[in-house]
Amino acid sequence: MIRVAILGSTGSIGRSTLEVIERHPDRFEVVALAANQALEPLALQVQRHRPRVAVLSKEKGLRGRNDLPQARWMEGREALLEITESPDVDVVVNALVGSVGLEPTLQTLLAGKRLALANKESLVAGGKLVVAAAKRGGGELIPVDSEHSAILQCLEGYERESVKRLVLTASGGPFRGWSAEQLRDAHPSQALNHPTWSMGDKITVDSATLANKALEVIEAHFLYGIDYDSLGVVVHPQSIVHSFVEFVDGSVLAQLGFPTMELPILYAMSYPERVEDRSLQTFDPVKASPLVFEEVDRDAFSLFSLGERAGRAGGTSPAVFNAANESAVEAFLQESIGFPQMTEVVSEAMDRLGRHPVESLEQVLDVDREARAISCELISILKGKESKRKS
Ligand code: MG
Image (cartoon, rainbow, N blue to C red; front, side, top):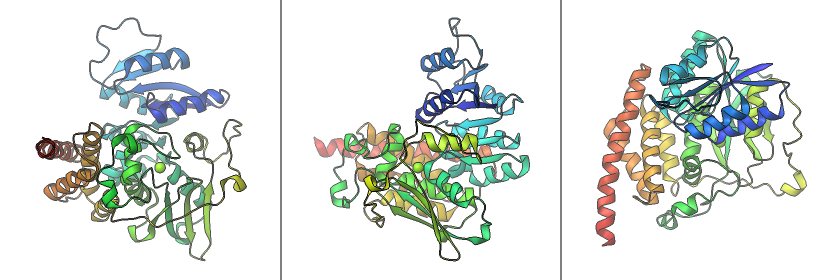
């Protein structure tokens, strides 16, 4: 029996993980659930899945509550870390959103456990620290993202020296084929209308700007120790091919499948074993035909280019890119700024904060906070300009 803890259980990946586990009660057991601040949904999950431990990572979030379903309830950051260190946990699924996910990632790897990683910030902002923690603690880092899971599956059994290039696929999102000109008036409701994947709002907008793909390139760099010159991206609107690995002999392997996060989630928990799951839809090559592949339009999707640049610059640049992007997406969703202004905010924040070598968790978290503060400032300036223009 594999004992699983889910950090971020009330989010989209967390809920899918619970669904997968529920279908395999002979294999997986939920021992701990943690949410950031969604107490009511967490309480419902605890009632249904009966973990031993339930954590609300928000400090003092449980105050005055004595009506919660039975479990050992804890709160705060320390409680999250207690889960990652517990001898009763085999796999930690880290589906937390934001930089709050970095510390549990490091602790899980230092504790020598398997980490099924869905938290982007861990590798994007703290990649160097994460790689070092895995080495030191002996923890096993298995990605939950469909692209990185595809690469992991294609790499199985091969030496690193035989790999020439990794190519990540991108659906292209709802604005595939749009010009920079057309994107100027893109509305949040259009950005949220993703053609192939069903995900949370933030990541759906990131798929529409392709910022998500830049973040995945940075993650792949750290996950597989591949330099940026050997990392490519290709647009593939059907989302059937989840990524490619090109080998030194010219052969290319790809992993294909119906677009669902449940497959990479199941694989991350059962790896390297494959588990039969009849609920998972497979893809029919005839029905899926023709599969299309296109170049990324780096001029129109400027956040993608900016993210790639942040990755190559290295150091704290990806942390700044990620935090500024998150603030910009939030402002775009609230209609405070327009689509192209997201790039303006992120670019300006990156210029102002510069690049420094990554040294510690505290430093990365500081950079994250600073980037958000500067972005907020920039957003309110842009917002002021926008309302003047409208009036
Ligand atoms: Mg992905």
